[in-house]
Length: 183
Ligand code: IMP
Ligand code: MG
Image (tube, rainbow, N blue to C red):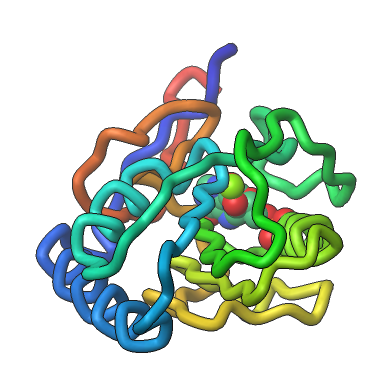
C-alpha cells in the first residue's frame, strides 16, 4: 500500500533509551528479588527490541515468552477490539510475570491482555511499557513501570512501526507528514 510521504523527527535518542532501559531493569530486578524465575512476556511485535535490551539488563533468572494481540493493522487508530493471535507457550499459574509492551495508547490492548493473564492466576503480574501516551487513554490502566511519557504523536522506531515500516530505527521518532507535490 502507498502512503502520504512522511519524515521522522527524532524524539528520544538511542542513548536516552539505553539509559532508561538500564534504570528500569534495575528497578525490576529489585522488585522481583528472590524470585525463582521471572517470566517476561513480550507483546508482539512492537516490544521485540525493547524486551531484548531489557532482559539483558535484568539480573534475575528469566524466561521469555511472547503473546500477540491484534493490532492496528495498517491504520493509525486502535480498533478497540482486541483478539489474541498468538498465545503464550508456557504456563504462568503461580509464577512471577512481567508483561512488556511498547506503547500504551487507548489502553484497550493492555487491559485485555492483563485481564486474560490474571485469569490464569499468576503469583504476581506487573507491566513495563516503554512509552505511554496518557492523554489518549480510554480505559483506565497504568503500567507498573513506564519508560517515557510522550504527547499525542504517532511514533516509530526501536521496534515500533508505521504499517510495518521503521521498526529498525535505533531511536524513537515522530511521524510528520509532508505535502505531496502531486497531491
Ligand atoms: P492501545 O490498545 O490503543 O493502547 O494500543 C496499543 C498498541 O497500539 C501499541 O502496542 C502499539 O502497537 C500501537 N500503537 C499505539 N500508538 C502507536 C504509535 O504512536 N506508533 C505505533 N504504534 C502505536
Ligand atoms: Mg503493540
